[in-house]
Image (cartoon, rainbow, N blue to C red; front, side, top):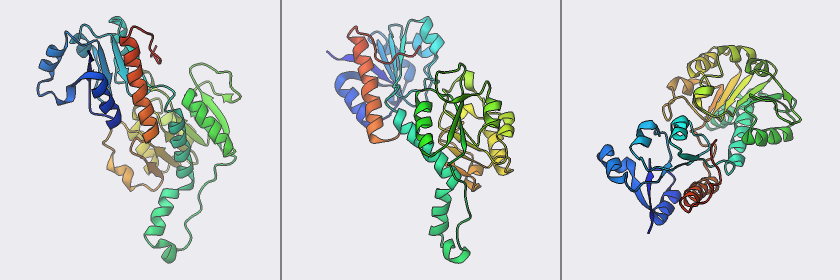
Length: 312
């Protein structure tokens, strides 16, 4: 007999196909009446698989009184009410570690493309401007610059290792100092002031909401760059847009936004920002590994064994 499983939204194709083989799957997003679907499924549901931007809140948990585990597709769990889960003794898991390399690669790519303006130079050539306007304007080197990492977790450490290969100096800020060979700054403003590039790689959620404020960007200054591969919520997006428009910072590289997939069109008019559609972990290999880990956590718990990547 297959275990019953609720899947909150349509996600990675290979993962969903495997879930359909392993579980009796309830596709919540397809239900014409969500409340009725939850009521019908509730007596059998011990596990829920989450993907996408929908909320897993207290109300959803209460609709599934036998729920024991919420397995998230991704590292960030800001869409899940962790306090509500804790009160109900529901285990929450994520897909930590398997996407570290891809996200770190994306972080470095955004640093490189933001400072060197390779996407803009590509457009310049394709538009025929090399012939008509001459050589593309000079850009900025990475070597010798200071990279300030806001959130030196596993992914942050991978980014730091890669950045050193580009001969960048590393600084960081966390809530707690770590045993690493990088300079530590006690607050975000000091980190920004000491950095040429400020890279954001913190978790999302209420604790980090709008951490990057006007004060932080003022400290970064007109020669500084911001790169965000964390969550759009960590940066005050309207302030960032204004600072880019007014050249109060040199540029930005963004993979995440406040209300995805809606990106303010004013960003599209700027030549000092590189924009990606939240694709840091979006490779075939990494998404497959994420799905396999999500399913492994579910199967382990339902077999009465400890999960592999619990969120504490």
